[in-house]
Amino acid sequence: MIKTKFSDSEERIMLYTILENLREGVNVVDEKGNLLFVNKASASYARSTVERMLGEHISKYYPKAALLDVLKTKKPILDVRIEHDDGRKYIVNAVPLIIDNEFRGGVATFRDVTEIEELSQKLEILEMELYLSKVDYAFDAIIGKDGSLKEAILKAQRAIGSPGGPRHSIIVGESGTGKTMFAKAMYFFARKIGVIDKEAPFIEINCAQFTNPDIAAIEIFGSEKGAFTGALEKKGLMELANGGILFLDEAHALEHYQTMLLKVIETGKLRRIGGRKEIDVNVIIIAASTKNLRNVLLPELYQRLAQYEIKLPPLRERPLCEKEQLLKVFKENYEKNANDRYKIKVKVNFSNAAKEILLNAYYPRNIRQFRDIINTAIDASLPIISEINKNSEVHSLVDIENIPYDLLGTENLSESNTFEQEGIISEIVENQEDVLKKIILRLREKGMGPRKISNILKEKGFKIEYYKVAYLLKKLNSQRK
Picture 1 (cartoon, one colour):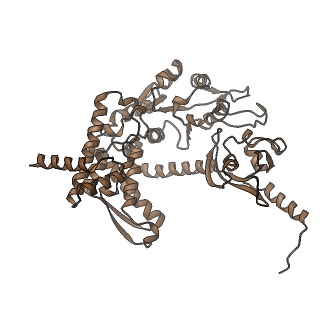
Picture 2 (picture 1 turned 180 degrees about the horizontal axis):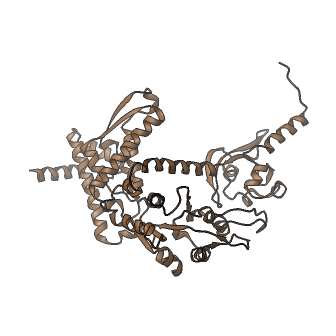
Picture 3 (picture 1 turned 90 degrees about the vertical axis):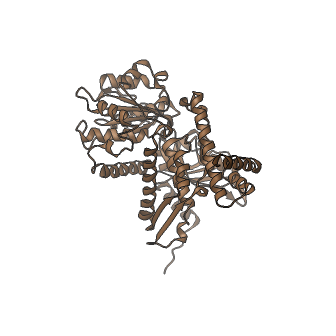
């Protein structure tokens, strides 16, 4: 093999050419954070030019740059996900720049994963479509359709399917109650009954992700080329949602562009930032919030959006049978994921004591937290995948010692406006005490004494001394007699 030799200058040119033409962004800063090198991809992400950026402090273009932390700690940051104010997401690797054992700055490479995450969302929708094709209507897939969510589903169907509609609507519920899932069910219902086309879009905006109102307006309403320095022609999310549904999650964070949104709703016409041309848009808007939007939105905007206000109950208000169904679904999803990803057949069961605790515990973050705790409990009952042979079958019994008690009921009650009544708070406290009693009795049945029980409970997040355990056991035994 013939090895071609290059001079130092030729090698520098080659390296520069490679870095300059990478699809990933590359930034190099000195020890003060001033940009020494910027490639074309980075300048494009920053909506600027290489010439403008060189010599400037990196925070001017990347206020959340991982390099800022590298400059402080002089330690590498690897594979961190950063979301910028414009809503775009990046995977970043940043390392300190050491020359002759001296810290001279930092180097970062990063790639835009916004489109990848959007494709992932589309795949999720396709999977949901496949599932929903097996049921009559989208709402048939929702647990509680004939129980706690019956009224909410009826309202949603009227909002979408009334002859004079469709209407805009608001979904209200605590964090983790399923607002996004419910909005997607409304979308599939609208497609199923022909209110929107089969190819109609579902565009989701998290209104809380924008800290800069100017960037928020551009992302939502779009911009024309030359509207501001470096501005390009860009369709906004409102325009991309044309013909379909625009889902405004965390709508209580809507602030500076309420008037613009109201105008689009009332006229059906949109004007991009810096543009003069009016664009026709036909969008069904579903807003969702954990707060009362009546106190947040302009009265006129609230009136237009709240034609149907749909309330989703917290998990603690849902009947036991629905919680059991949710537990079954999460268990089956865990088993399916293990089989699909690792070719491991997992069969999960729950002891009666564990099931009773899981079904009766308090979950401040509702269904999302319920799911996560069930998954963590199943994890604790199984060996890790490196200890399991592929295509083998593993049986798991989730018992009380597998439950992550430190994750239960740790949320600040004042964060939820539904906890204002003292009766609800005392009910939750009593419920937690019942759970604790059941755990103590079960551990006692396994032959453990008060000190051992106390130590186990402390490891699980319960602060209870051994003498209190002994007193409680004595009291419970006397009650049994």
